[in-house]
Image 1 (cartoon, rainbow, N blue to C red):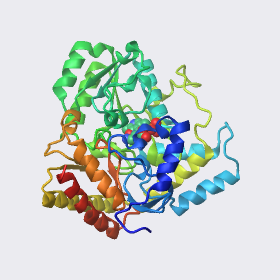
Image 2: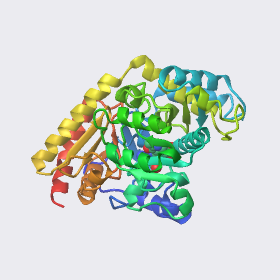
Image 3: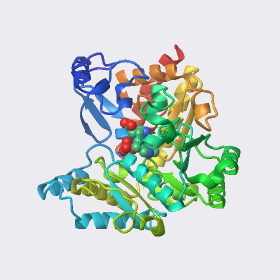
Image 4: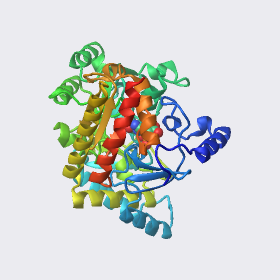
Amino acid sequence: MASRPYTQFARSQAIFAAAQEVIPGGVNSPVRAYKSVGGDPVVIARGAGSRVWDVDGNEYLDYVGSWGPLILGHAPAEVIEAVCAAARLGTSFGALTEREVSFARLLCDTVPCLEMVRLVSSGTEAVMSAIRLARAATGRDLVIKFAGGYHGHSDGLLANAGSGIATQGIPGTPGVPEDFAALTLTIPFNNLDALRAVLVARGGEVACLIGEPVPANMGVVLPAPGYWEEVQRLLRHAGALLIFDEVITGFRLGLTGGQEWTGVIPDLCTLGKIIGGGLPVGAYGGRADLMRRMAPEGPVYQAGTLSGNPLAVAGGETALHLLAETNPYPALEASAARLADGLAAGARDAGVPVTITRAGSMLTVFFTDGPVTDYASAARADTRRYAAFFRTCLVNGVLLAPSQFEATFVSTAHSDADIDATITRAREAFAAAAAV
Ligand code: KE4
């Protein structure tokens, strides 16, 4: 491993230059391009446990975790073996397989709102499908989302979104017809008066509200005590459905995700990331009376060539069984709390005001003196300071999300020594942020 701070990125730069000739922006997902933190992205060669290595041989303690799926770290042996064994039997059949049934049963036995579930291949697909179902079930068109909420890139949900949209600082995206965008109403998170006002004005037209139980796409933002209970009460009164987008929080905040964490059981939820064990799986589900409206049992159409893919299901089911058998959540909570405390101390010693938010093993260091309760307050963070913090961490072997509006993910593979090393290396990064 090269000595730190790393200075050798020649191969990453050459590969990124070549990538930009044939892939828009050189990446297959915008946030990977490091636009908001500057510099070229590092190109990853491999990962193992808590670490990844770039193509120049630089080693990093990884807290991107593929943006959430890798709660067990990179390439856990059991998951790899399950995927390889499945591959030897064939990679895809376009037909029902037995393991899809056991996987669906596992999800329904674990996630409180799930009476039935449908597998798809991404979180975006899961959200698109859940929204379509909510509109069909209610006969209504309007969807309520939160400013800074990100639920994948389907047309109606890019208005005022978080994650990559917030990172790029763009209000929405060209290509979404005004008529589509008009069907999405955006309100601030943690603001019940804003929801009441929308429901008073247009409640009869609202099919659903979709939100992450703990938003992680504006950075991690905690719901106020009692917030979700009141949201659910208001929606029920208006005849609208509640969809928890648990693509990140599902199996992250515990086996029951955001549902036991908030104490609220939604009508529908979407899942992804962790349930695929690092392979492409999304899912949506909830009340059986709603889900039975989906074709071929009902008239609401949704389909997918690779839905329930045998390799992805093998990887996902193995990962979820490991989580259920080992219950790593108390240890993850302790590790993430220690990391958050250590980072807070580093920022304090560097004289940099930060607000660190955390839910379970996901956290965000906001470069603002807080508090951060919604996207407007998150957006007050100093993204130039975050960029300096990110880049200094990177050259010192700590890989964070290349955006202020994302989460840092701790995995079961992060040892106490890894956490301590991260805290130590971040001290220099806070000094760099202080100098901005
Ligand atoms: P995918 O289509 O990317 O699998 O899932 C979309 C999605 C839906 N819902 C939530 C709550 C999500 O966080 C996501 C995707 N998350 C982002 C990172 N926050 C994916 C990273 C990227 O866009 O490259």
